[in-house]
Image (cartoon, rainbow, N blue to C red):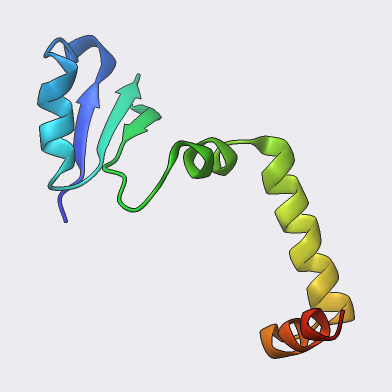
Length: 87
């Protein structure tokens, strides 16, 4: 996989050009040598998925849930299905 690096001052091509480059790998835009944004091709993703993946509140909820599960345990998917069948 290729990672394309483009300094913001050099990013003068049309957006479509960078989207085509992203087919081969992420296009990372930098400012003063530091990454500030990335353009990646999305596969099997809808707008809701993309939005949630960048939502700090949702990400905090997921992190909290994972920590709780690691500490307290949880149900297997089979146990959940069984419980739902009984209700």
